[in-house]
Amino acid sequence: MSGTALAELTAALAVRELQLRTRLVRNGHAVPEADITHDVADLKDRAAEGAQQAVDDAEADVLRGQHARVGAALRRAHEHRYGLCLACGEAISLERLRALPEAELCLPCQRTQEGVRRTPPAR
Image (cartoon, rainbow, N blue to C red; front, top):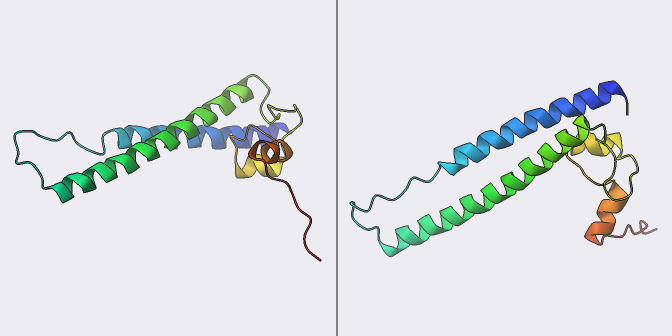
Protein backbone atom coordinates (compact mmCIF):
# COMPACT_ATOMS: atom_id res chain seq x y z
CA MET A 1 0.00 0.00 0.00
CA SER A 2 1.37 3.39 -0.92
CA GLY A 3 2.16 5.97 1.73
CA THR A 4 -0.43 8.30 0.22
CA ALA A 5 -3.17 5.67 0.38
CA LEU A 6 -2.21 4.80 3.95
CA ALA A 7 -2.32 8.47 4.97
CA GLU A 8 -5.71 8.90 3.29
CA LEU A 9 -7.19 5.87 5.00
CA THR A 10 -5.67 6.67 8.39
CA ALA A 11 -7.16 10.16 8.20
CA ALA A 12 -10.55 8.66 7.30
CA LEU A 13 -10.28 6.33 10.30
CA ALA A 14 -9.41 9.20 12.64
CA VAL A 15 -12.41 11.21 11.43
CA ARG A 16 -14.70 8.18 11.81
CA GLU A 17 -13.38 7.51 15.32
CA LEU A 18 -14.16 11.10 16.34
CA GLN A 19 -17.66 10.90 14.81
CA LEU A 20 -18.43 7.67 16.64
CA ARG A 21 -17.08 8.96 19.94
CA THR A 22 -19.16 12.11 19.62
CA ARG A 23 -22.31 10.09 18.89
CA LEU A 24 -21.65 7.76 21.80
CA VAL A 25 -21.27 10.66 24.22
CA ARG A 26 -24.34 12.36 22.83
CA ASN A 27 -26.42 9.17 22.96
CA GLY A 28 -25.30 8.49 26.49
CA HIS A 29 -27.23 11.60 27.55
CA ALA A 30 -30.05 11.38 25.01
CA VAL A 31 -32.64 10.01 27.45
CA PRO A 32 -32.86 11.97 30.71
CA GLU A 33 -33.45 10.18 33.98
CA ALA A 34 -37.10 10.10 35.00
CA ASP A 35 -37.96 12.48 37.81
CA ILE A 36 -39.86 10.42 40.40
CA THR A 37 -41.44 13.54 41.85
CA HIS A 38 -43.57 13.99 38.72
CA ASP A 39 -46.76 12.11 37.96
CA VAL A 40 -46.23 8.59 36.68
CA ALA A 41 -46.76 8.36 32.91
CA ASP A 42 -49.55 6.12 31.67
CA LEU A 43 -48.75 2.61 30.47
CA LYS A 44 -48.58 3.58 26.78
CA ASP A 45 -46.08 6.35 27.48
CA ARG A 46 -43.95 4.08 29.63
CA ALA A 47 -44.02 1.36 26.97
CA ALA A 48 -43.01 3.86 24.28
CA GLU A 49 -40.22 5.21 26.47
CA GLY A 50 -39.01 1.66 27.16
CA ALA A 51 -39.04 0.85 23.45
CA GLN A 52 -37.12 4.03 22.63
CA GLN A 53 -34.59 3.22 25.36
CA ALA A 54 -34.12 -0.25 23.86
CA VAL A 55 -33.51 1.30 20.43
CA ASP A 56 -31.09 3.82 21.93
CA ASP A 57 -29.25 1.04 23.78
CA ALA A 58 -29.01 -1.08 20.62
CA GLU A 59 -27.67 1.88 18.64
CA ALA A 60 -25.12 2.59 21.36
CA ASP A 61 -23.98 -1.05 21.23
CA VAL A 62 -23.52 -0.81 17.45
CA LEU A 63 -21.62 2.46 17.82
CA ARG A 64 -19.37 0.99 20.53
CA GLY A 65 -18.55 -1.94 18.26
CA GLN A 66 -17.77 0.36 15.33
CA HIS A 67 -15.68 2.58 17.59
CA ALA A 68 -13.69 -0.42 18.82
CA ARG A 69 -13.05 -1.63 15.24
CA VAL A 70 -11.92 1.84 14.14
CA GLY A 71 -9.61 2.10 17.15
CA ALA A 72 -8.16 -1.32 16.37
CA ALA A 73 -7.55 -0.26 12.76
CA LEU A 74 -5.75 2.87 13.94
CA ARG A 75 -3.56 0.72 16.22
CA ARG A 76 -2.76 -1.59 13.31
CA ALA A 77 -1.82 1.45 11.20
CA HIS A 78 0.48 2.67 13.98
CA GLU A 79 2.05 -0.81 14.16
CA HIS A 80 2.48 -0.96 10.35
CA ARG A 81 0.01 -3.86 10.08
CA TYR A 82 -2.92 -1.90 8.65
CA GLY A 83 -4.43 -3.31 5.48
CA LEU A 84 -3.41 -6.90 6.19
CA CYS A 85 -6.11 -9.51 6.70
CA LEU A 86 -6.20 -10.74 10.30
CA ALA A 87 -7.17 -14.24 9.12
CA CYS A 88 -4.82 -14.99 6.21
CA GLY A 89 -2.26 -12.17 6.37
CA GLU A 90 -2.80 -11.14 2.74
CA ALA A 91 -3.35 -7.51 1.74
CA ILE A 92 -6.92 -6.24 1.93
CA SER A 93 -7.83 -4.56 -1.34
CA LEU A 94 -7.54 -0.79 -1.42
CA GLU A 95 -11.07 -0.67 -2.84
CA ARG A 96 -12.40 -2.53 0.24
CA LEU A 97 -10.43 -0.31 2.63
CA ARG A 98 -11.77 2.81 0.96
CA ALA A 99 -15.31 1.51 1.39
CA LEU A 100 -14.72 0.22 4.94
CA PRO A 101 -11.47 1.63 6.38
CA GLU A 102 -11.78 -0.44 9.56
CA ALA A 103 -12.02 -3.73 7.61
CA GLU A 104 -10.16 -6.51 9.42
CA LEU A 105 -10.55 -9.24 6.80
CA CYS A 106 -10.02 -9.50 3.07
CA LEU A 107 -13.19 -10.17 1.11
CA PRO A 108 -12.58 -13.93 0.66
CA CYS A 109 -11.97 -14.39 4.41
CA GLN A 110 -14.99 -12.20 5.23
CA ARG A 111 -17.16 -14.35 2.99
CA THR A 112 -15.79 -17.50 4.61
CA GLN A 113 -16.49 -16.12 8.09
CA GLU A 114 -20.03 -15.23 7.09
CA GLY A 115 -20.51 -18.57 5.37
CA VAL A 116 -21.22 -16.86 2.05
CA ARG A 117 -20.15 -18.58 -1.14
CA ARG A 118 -19.93 -16.78 -4.42
CA THR A 119 -22.13 -18.38 -6.99
CA PRO A 120 -21.40 -17.81 -10.64
CA PRO A 121 -23.95 -15.63 -12.41
CA ALA A 122 -26.73 -17.50 -14.21
CA ARG A 123 -26.30 -17.67 -17.97
